[in-house]
Amino acid sequence: MKTIAVIIDFDNYFGTDLSKVTSESLELAFSELVNLCEDKFRDFESISIRLYGGWYNEMSLTKQASGLQQLLYNVNVFPKVQKGKIINGSIEMVSELFGIPNFTWGYTYKETNGIKRVRIDFDKVDEVCNSNRDTCPKFILYNLTRDKGRKCKVEGCNSVHKDIFKGIEQKMVDTLIACDILSLAEEETTKGLVVISDDQDHFPSLALAVEKQKAKQTRNLDDIILVIQNDMKHQFISDFLKPFEIQTILLS
Picture 1: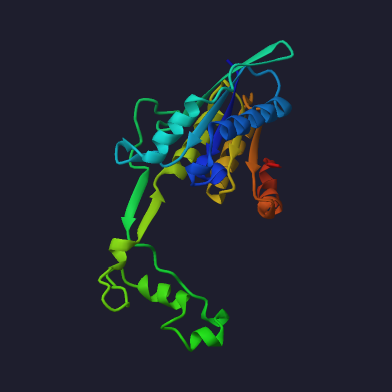
Picture 2: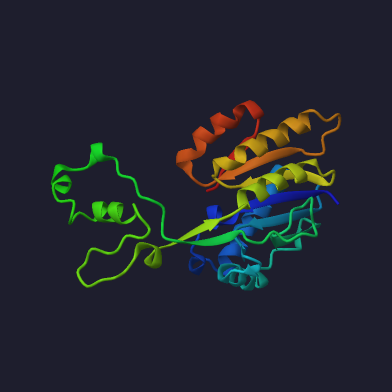
């Protein structure tokens, strides 16, 4: 079955605040992507929408992942019937690589004690604040983040940086996306590949996927498309990827 693979960097596309996401907004976004695939590709039978994110805290689903599962349960996109043609499809929160289907990649979400050190461009600091570092909020934050064991300076407060601030990180997610870009591009049933993200970390795998297609006697892919949202980045990304003939589309 000829398939269009749609790879979505979830937080990059939908944001990190799931409270602002609804089943209706997800269904609308996915429907627009189906329309995009219909516009850009021909002679395919299904669309595989793959969502990548920090779904696992160790080997347990995160609260956000569980919430997203519930939202997706009420999303109705497939099958789509249009002009007598039936398009089947799937929407999946990815925890297994396309090329290694029987292994769950946990530990993709990590909370850390404390936050990374904040840096200040001292050349741009106003002289008023520079002369009042004890009361200037940016200098207070700067000093507090220099040491995760540092205590709050307010008299009577025993709060410690590492106990109050929590950092949140995604682990392996970009690598999972990179691996699947390459694996899906090589899959004979993949008719087209759409990647949705503004993240420059995906550029090398996209470029390599294109070059590997050029080296094949018979290409299975019609095209690889990168969809971005940030209009400020669009021209830069288009110019950067131009040597690889990767089509970039600005999402309206």
